[in-house]
Image (cartoon, rainbow, N blue to C red):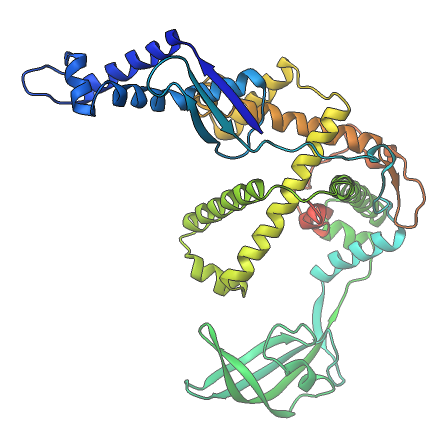
Amino acid sequence: MRLSVELDEAEVDEALDATLRRLGQQVRVPGFRPGHVPRPVLEARLGGADALRQQAISDALPDLYAKAVADTELDPIAAPEIDLTSGAEGGPVTFDAVVEVRPNVSVAGYAGLVVSVPRPAVTEEDVDAQVDRLREQSGELVAAGRPAVDGDYVTVDVHAERQGAEDLDVEDFLYEVGSGSALPGLDEQLRGKSPGDILEFASSVPDGAEEQASQVRVLVKDVKRKELPDATDEWASEASEFDTLEALREDVRGRLAKVRVVQSQMALRERGLDALVELVQDDPPASLVESEVRERLHDLGHRLESRRMTVEQFLAASGRDEESLLAEIRAEATTAVRADLALRALADAEDVEVTDDEFEEAIAEMAEQVGTSAADLRRRLDRAGRLAAVRSDRRKAKALAWLLDHVEVVDDEGNPVSRDELRIGPGDEGEPGERGSSDVVVEPAAATEGQP
């Protein structure tokens, strides 16, 4: 977009005065105190009156451009190309600014979106599985009396002759068959073996960060199976805060229900936003994508620095090279930009606005997160020119909330899901028990799967 701006003589004189004051303080001229250098002397130092005028115009252009952007309510996404069209030597000054603005994308069809989520239902089989996991924690190892199978625990001595490194010897190593957590090929060798059996096979054994080809010899010394306690009231009272098995099962059922609801809520948020983004047909501007890539790289650098890790170490640990990491970040940045444009378009279509109270609430929430006052954070954001971004972020959040309230929600089989099923009732949070509470069987990580 081309933006044309004109300054009259009075505005040019103001710009000249500002430049003279600045140069008067900066330029050191023998015989004159800073701030008292006569204008003719400054003009001579700069190459004449025309040169001083051009310097003043150059100094004023950034503020003049910013004011013109604010007056016209444009949303530039890249630095402008400014062309002075007249007034370099006298008279009114005019300039053109060619600037790339944020595009308006189409999200036609957003009112008819259908989003599938996992139905947040808890079956008796789900409860059984969680109770069994708690029983696993109370299990005891007993002699198997048969050859080893997956799930058994074997005690072994391991000797590995490593090429180019010292031999490795480990005695009385307790290993779960089928866990895949030790040497490559060990599980296959252990299945069907009994105490006294000796296994010899080729494998790779760690040597620091590298793997060394090795010849491995394993002596099977013992094979045990895990014997679980019966699910009784007595066991429940010993393993949890509950006196009966039914009370324990009811607690597990309630906790699982809350986890499933959270999982469904997060799936609705992620899939709802994905569905909206799919409506955007145009590719996002390269300038926006590159800006997002730079920001993500900057954030990654800060995170690595806080962990005292170099980029090279991070790449080695994640098994990627620099090219694949950059491609991954660029793909994520492209998706993020498309989501940003889609939510802005939805907000425009539904006239979503942020009230002053909502804006102040957003500032207060951010201030609490960073441990400062709302007034202090507002001042800092104002100085950085970020207040408009805060309002925009809150507006997009409201647009997303509108979307999730209006999409049609179905389960993975296409059956309607009531929004009442996606809510956790008041006072339904519960507190973990003091000893062995059943909350240990519902892993917190399960509630964050699929979080965007």
